[in-house]
Length: 126
Image (tube, rainbow, N blue to C red; front, side, top):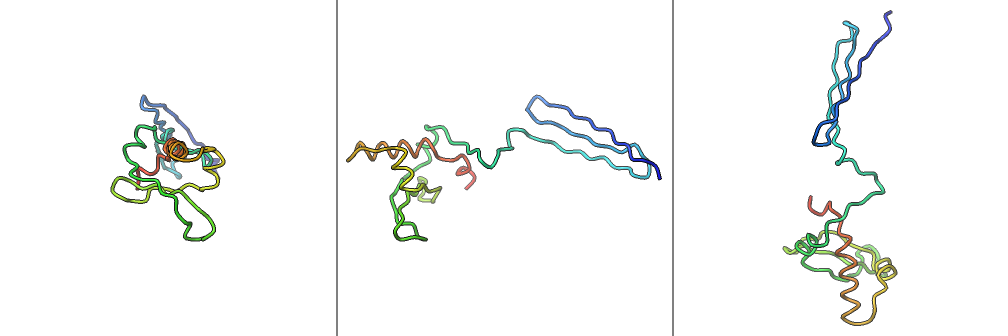
């Protein structure tokens, strides 16, 4: 039995894509593996990308404090688009703890700004 020998080639393109080619040097195992890896599409599970504030302002129609449908004792902030489509939600307690809003209209503005700075970019795919 002949040992298998493979050649590997990698090239980085101008658009940050990387091409990988893996081919066999043994005629009995003739194949070529070719794929493109786009670095900017790979995000770790812990990393969340947020929309720029200006873009979030343009797509968010409302932020409403609501009861969590799974737990009546729990509150959430639900974010809706301009056409009333649910985009995402935030835990009420976490937002209040992080934003530390004051009372009244100023506090509502602080919570709104906190949320608008944290709209995940995946809402554009909805």
